Length: 124
Image (cartoon, rainbow, N blue to C red; front, side, top):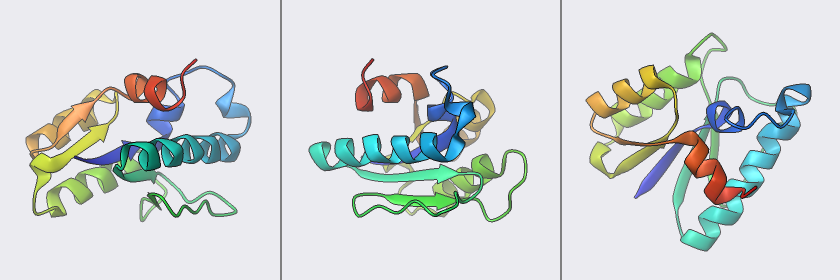
């Protein structure tokens, strides 16, 4: 199973003050995803709407962003990744965005609740 993570949707599912420092919250998410990906031998791509500054890099997963910083651009990028994949049924998209979930299901991927993934990678 390959994962595509709606980055800010997973970050935002827990009201832990992430909005005070979005860059730090994005970095913390990537760090948790890295540890989980290595432990589970998971192929993970995390998508953000805009690139953080400074960039966040990872050896264990792919960190990417939408081509244009516009509302819902990360959703559009996630759908683009699913549609472009030769085997969309092998993709699991982590999001709780209903509109995005409907779009990726229509493209053949499965959906995993953002809060559930957050609890797995970063238990309370």
